[in-house]
Amino acid sequence: MGLSSDEPRPSLWSDLPAELAGLILRRLPPSHADRLSFLAVCRQWRLAAQQQRGSLPPALPWLRLGPRTFQSLPGGEVLRLTGWAACTPSKAARTCSFDGWLLLERGDGTCFLGNPFSGATVDVPRRLADDGSAFSVGTLMRKMVVCSPDLVAATLLGVDVGLCRPGDDSWWASGSTFSRASRDGWYEDIAFHRGKVYGLTADEELISLHVADNGDVEVEHEILQQSDSDTDQEAESDSDTDSENTEPEDAEFDPVMEDELPSKIHYLVASPDKLLMVKWSVPRGGAIAGAAKVIDAIKLKVFAADLETGRWVELKNGDLAGQALFVSKGCSRAIHLAGHDQRFRGDRVYFLGVDLATCCKEVEIPSYGFYDLRTETVGRVFLNGGRYRFRSEWFFP
Image 1 (tube, one colour):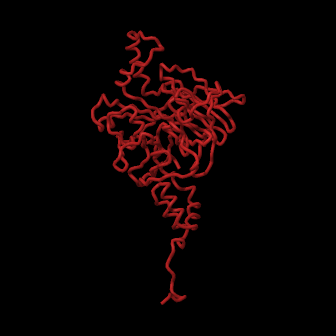
Image 2: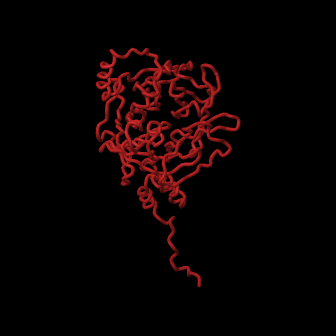
Image 3: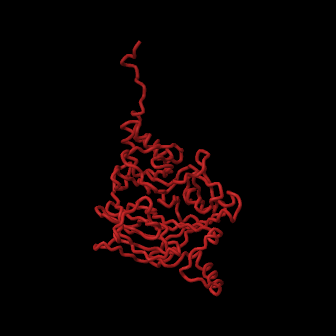
């Protein structure tokens, strides 16, 4: 027998008031994949999500596993993006994803950055303005930053910074004269903060760059001094070795000596109110036996750029005010974490295992790890019981 007209119909998810649907959305983990699933339920829930858009915390990044394959955090779902199927990821690029952009190559060899969620694209040239020679964008560019629809910045093999604007057929380089015999002056990272492009060198100089009307890249030194924590120690070390140092200034690196020294890595992170430098010292695998001991020996500090005094100021416990820093060579971002998931908390720096592998090849490398600034302890995460992927990268959908 069928239902009579006066019998109540089953309740539908679409009947849920928008206010309650919004509460459900706010209680979900900060996962972009979960939010996409929420939007797929019905039109009413999509409207509820629009009402909550301004109050939702930022979503956690994905972990890029391959050219179009990603792993969602915190759930671990493996996702594959299918946009621009006719294009291929730029060849020879370890970091062919930058923030929320993919570096792709068309059939004719031209390259562009594409945002798979907004559909926006930004063409990037394959030539340098100084000599006009063509190059592989994926090989030369270590990092790209889409500063605005009118400006893209990139590091050129770490030695220089290039800038381009829509319609440019070549990159404008900053004209670095740094010697390849000394890595101290190489650019380790770039960031876009409050309308300016900043470059960070290995000796902790902070430099701002912009393209003048005539196309020249104008460079200004914002911070010349190294961070306070190293100044006294390095000055003492220099005074002890100056009398014994007879090597010429342009001497080549000694690879044996390099392998014995701790590896220092720098990241530049633009937070909403500060420009931050993350500096860590990682012992070489040969110096300390065992994966756990190597990880535990990591020393990490965070500094804020004081552009008025031209100094780096170390941030103390709690100065990040609940922000978590996700850092890598391809992209870094500061996001505020205030949820109840103990795996992702503020006042932590999350790093990739692939970056750790560059200086600790002998140890078991995690998929990613974190340094807790409050407890000064390090945690390791092995996704699905596996190790790091050589081409992994943070990706912010």
